[in-house]
Image (tube, rainbow, N blue to C red; front, top):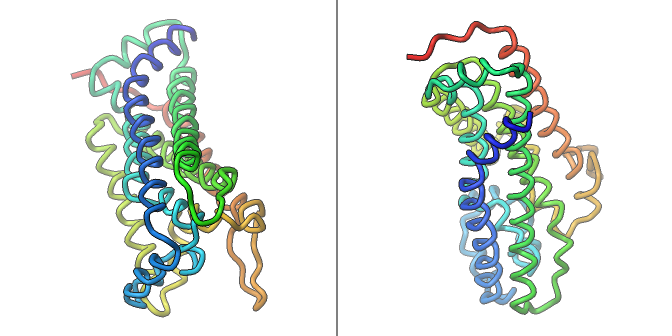
Length: 285
């Protein structure tokens, strides 16, 4: 087990460091950039956004234009999501199909270790790295808030639920990627499958938000459980499982969304463990 941990950590540490530094620096810069826009000016900018596009805002215009709301937008920014996706897909795809493609899995399994231990150690390192990336995102926001001033004070603790949501997203994506990797033998094909899955889910989310009468599609995308901006400044939503509307509707709270993503990720890991422990491994080419 010690050798497995050492091998996995050596393979991941430079990759993680590059993602972590980028994550922290981006969040710090984002705080500084948002501090250059007073609330009134930011509201004026948002007023020019077409009404149909405003449906894609995860929160109201007033909340988005607030100091905390502007900083929270970083947790749903394409660059941040790209870092999460790259870490989860790259590490998850390397567990089985990556090792098979390089011809190293046969040598690893020739040692006195079980397949489940190999899967567990690689997945554990990836999950720990995901937690570290979420922590770096929060730390970047916290450091930025210490260096700049907003019109009203912003408590760095407001962004803890958003960071937890980032971790839950990476946990889910890693579980799905590990499951696909346990079936396949080519890493490029694993990345293609999970990349296509992510793209389809993103398209479904956009259609559910913009197309009238198609809101029900949101139940078929994991993005419905990922809404970090809405949790900032709204503790009642951030630390609850289900939030009920006055009219009888409901939506997932911060804890509920995290639980859904982590639960689906655990299902992916469990499926990967069953498949990998039972399948016949092809000979390295």
